[in-house]
Image 1: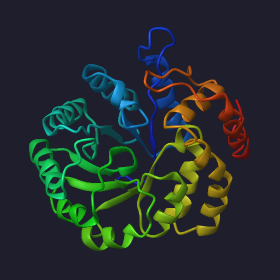
Image 2: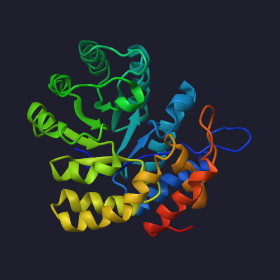
Image 3: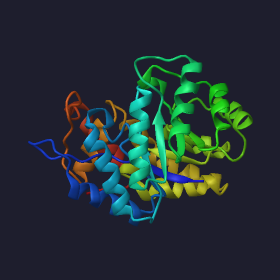
Length: 293
């Protein structure tokens, strides 16, 4: 089971051309490994999966897997609102050597719970790789219910869920329905510590992009039952958890990484750079966490 602080890695891009900035991407991977990040999600929501074409999507996964070289797990984002497309991306991630895949619920088409079950079942049966469900209704308008997760957990290679509702009341139903061998990851930095203290296994994190060591230390403490240390670290990150969502992710986190000198602040439309009115707030949050250039 993959546990701890798992960064939902941004995808750096070059100014002007908007091409992927491969040297910066590789540099970020090395930095995360040095800082103690426990795993990397390649091309998730934070990695701007919605604006990468299929060729780029597969290549980012391949390059990250190659750069990591087995030192920490790589989870490939391969979800889609088309089951056939999700299978294709998942097969590519498997061929590239990813350790697992993260599959967001189909967005916009709003399937029923039975549709969700059949969607994930078909992917699981088509590709022999560990698969992690991803529920983030705030972005997909599709909420996978704990009962559906419990049904899917019975499939051998569906091994976990990233639950990004921030609703801690779901933990009881997920744990009861899915059993101890099923990984439950937070997808909401602000409540991740509490979820881990309730039996969760880690945090697939936006904040870890800019504070990898602090997030790794916080997750380690929470998972070890050191609630006092976990709470102290989490308190230093509280402003950052909030500031990185002042505008749609990954707008603030890319701006912050540019301020830290780690990459250019470039996004593809329809995403736009962080508004001037929020920049001082992000800087203050970085400072509060002890993060400087």
